[in-house]
Structure formats: structure tokens, C-alpha cells
Image (cartoon, rainbow, N blue to C red; front, side, top):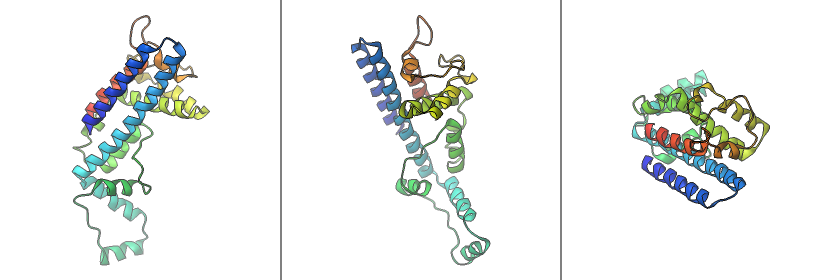
Length: 222
């Protein structure tokens, strides 16, 4: 799974660089940068969903605790008595992928997280301490980079006032200092322009390439 994501991300990076080398128009490079961000952010969502499911499948003990809590929260006192007396809860020792997904989301959707903080919270709820060690060890800077690419993806996809405000907050977070991705409290009207620009003028990599590099390292760490 991790190697599959790494391959897909490498392929997306290679495609971006090949296409970029053939482009002469700044506007086309802007569009390429934005479309690449959408593509790799989607890959990231699928990777994280698969990772969480794999961790639960490997050791469902923490997930079993979550299921028991969820069961108790939705029952009255009388229902709990009936369950305890006639149908006691039996913690699962193994759960297949489809069942895990259906128990988390009734519609069978991928497990998605709106932020790095939500990822940590979800992992703590469903995944054993040993398996979530990499997620738990994410630094403040790594979490800010994750939040930035989520905000970029959302603003490119929706172009709403809400997504613009969220991106402004994400890109101005202090933890991004030193990454080349930080910007002051100025709204980003065209994410593709931000992504294609070099973070250290006149030398340096375009920000989209820096994000791709961070994504590769973070995926390997969790």
C-alpha cells in the first residue's frame, strides 16, 4: 500500500515535470500546477484511508473498544441491561476491509479527514497506539503542510469564499516558516499562481514541487 502510493506519487511528479517542460505559457503552467495539486491530494486521501483500514485490520483491539463505546452511547439504560443479559458484546478479533469501512461510514465511502488534527484524532479513536506511532509523531510543521495542501485542494475544487478564508489561514500558519510555503495574511486568489511560483527568488523550487516532496516524506513516516 505504501509502496503503491509512492509509485503513484512518483508517476504524478514525473508527469508534471514532463508536461511542464513542454509548456511555454505561464497560464498553462498555472493550470498544470493546480491540476497536479488536485491529483496528488486525491491520491493522499485514498492512501490515508487505506492506511487506517490496514492498521485496524492488522490489530482491531482499539477499534473494538470504539465499537463498544459507540454501542453504549446509542442505547438507553434498559437496552444496555437487555444487551448485557441476553446478547453480550463480543469484541471482534479480526475484521475485513469492507466491514471496517461500513462500520465507520454507512455509505461505504473512503475515510477522509478535514485536517491533520482530525487524522490524529481519528487514528487515536480507531488504531492501536503501536500502529499510530508514526501519525502521532507528526510534527507541527508537517501537520501545517498537510493542512495547507488540503486547503489548496479545497479552494481549487470549490473556489468559494469559505475555502479562500481557510486557505488564507493555512498558508499563513507560523509553523510553515522555513518551508518556503508560508505567506503573510494575504488571500490567495489563484492557487495555481502560488503553486507555480518559486519560494526563493530567483532560485528555488516551485511550491508545488516542495509540496510533492513533503508529501512523499510524510507518507513514508506514518
